[in-house]
Length: 228
Length: 249
Image (cartoon, each protein chain N blue to C red):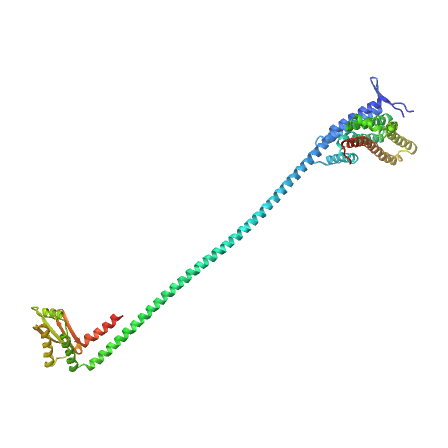
């Protein structure tokens, strides 16, 4: 079992390399966003066009899954995609490890997704209505719903962690066995796999959130007599 | 595979911070600028739509105005045609009237010209007739004609009204009264005596007598007493004939 790599100690809190790398990524992403958006104009430059295209692509993807709620979900899901893309790819830089290769990071993100699902569900239909859907179609289904919630959260965390950790391990193994030329295709595979895993994690989070919102929306529709 | 709760919590906090940063510095500015651009596009489209609507309205107004103008033009054209027809009729009537007046004037002038021509022809004919009769009478004149003309004078003197007789007598009674007797040739004594007797019967007493030969008389006698003149000769008769012809004009 791998020991926890603490870089420095901040009082009682041990700061690991995962946290430091995450801080670097946050600084990089935040600085890039600030630099890219500080001089936006109605007549867009190439960089602004690319930036607007990326944001609109994310918004359109959310809009297709959850029509009418894109602006509400965009900050969370979009940040998931952006952070995971950077976090998964940072492992290809020598000397840095992907934060997502640490189960603590993926578990924390999965826990955030778990909480956000309930947050958006309660916000959409109210606490009682949201809790009531666990008893649908029958109260007998309550344990299964609970197990489902926990298992999919765990699966979300472990899937991302396992894929990224295995990618880095495989790359390290190939580097050790085959030298420096062989890892190039592996690195290409790493890039593709990193982006795919980021997309999968964000899309699953979006699906879970949209499931909770839509179930509450159906409850509200039944109450108001609207039958789509 | 080791789960560090501290790292887990820090990563949760880190991600929430990232969400705030991206929302603050990426999503919000980009979506705002997109929204502003969409608003600008919508405003431009609305302006374009308004401009299109205004253009369509202007086109409708223009078409309506054109239709009105066309109607007005047709009305004006019809009115103009009516006025032209009325003017033409009026001018035609005026022309016909003028032509009628001109024809009447021409006819009058023609009639006058014909009358003048006829008068000239008659004058010329009378002149010729006078000259012809004058030459004929000159050839026929002689003592016999003188006697007959003197007989005519004597007959006329016998038929004078009383009033003229008294006036002649008064003229003869004037102190310097002269009875002038003009003849074309000398009268024979018997004829002269008959004439003097006849004059004495009218005048009562004869004043001094002045005999005068005037060949221009052709034949006959001309007797003058003061303002009175008693003529029975061819010159005076032909002259009267000619003057009578002129007065007849």
